[in-house]
Length: 149
Image 1 (tube, one colour):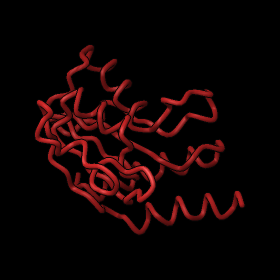
Image 2: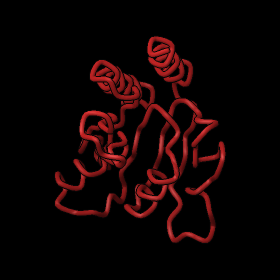
Image 3: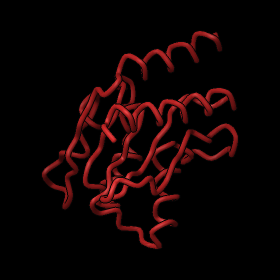
């Protein structure tokens, strides 16, 4: 499948988060052979967990599937640019590739405010494909926050 196809699936997970009252962010962790190893959506409100970001949920699920914390050769697809926590986690897990949709000017750590994943001082730097279906990702977030105001 293409990055756009994976992102559409992540957007559907984001929509599920929104219907449950969480910020609509969805994520998938794709294995080297192209299989989905883990899915996630924001669960901070539902679980009352500050680490309940879609990326963390997807990486935890993938690690359980693999029985391994190293996610080498994997691709993380997420609808919103990761924050510092999530960017640090994907570096620590050695995710090979990151694909994201909307940029996050307020908390983004993959180029917007910081660039954690490309910091040469770290031992691992994933490839980044930014802006995939960015308009759709942005619209999902905008519609969610407009409805809440």
